[in-house]
Image 1 (cartoon, rainbow, N blue to C red):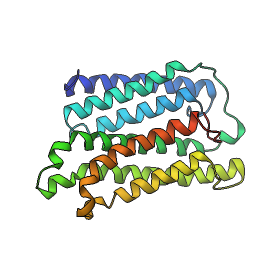
Image 2: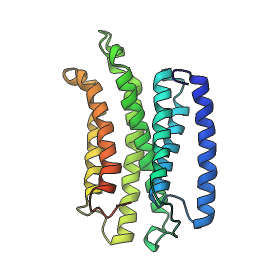
Image 3: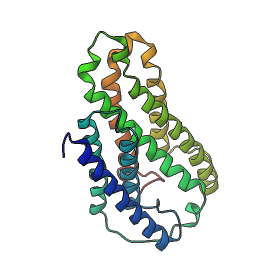
Image 4: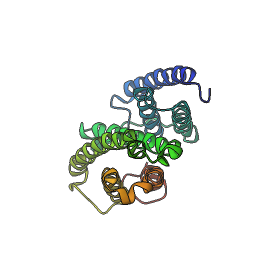
Length: 229
């Protein structure tokens, strides 16, 4: 299916339907939004990558589209390494702010992943002397949309944190890396207006994907964060 947009589109729709049924079953069993454990977190990220791929499929190349398919399947396959023990959410999770915070964060991750993939596949185009090509407006558009989602996610997360721990902010690794990520992509929004730094656009967006993995996986598995999975 590599490079074949039609077959990849069909696969993504099938994957999206399957994950939707999965979430529906988990929500029924938990009697709450299914975003509260490791398996559901990776499945949520996979779902939002799928949705992003389908929304932007006419604006990206076949190879980029297929790369998103692989990324979505990789995220979903990660759920297989965890032992699935279904637990009812604890009291501090049972607030509307938590299920608003998590999907919006992952929606930002998905859009920023797409921006990074688009930047990498646009390397040859970015060498063009045409300023319009060099700016690659889609990358900035994806970043802007992701930045909006992430800003709301941080706002809702702060409210949830206050209800759960009595503070809008704490010196926690997950929170610190989230702020770093927010500032990083916020600064990248201005790179098109800075000709001196425009040639750094591709490597900076590629680096952004590494920062996402650190924020999402690194702090969740390798630190003592209160956001530990």
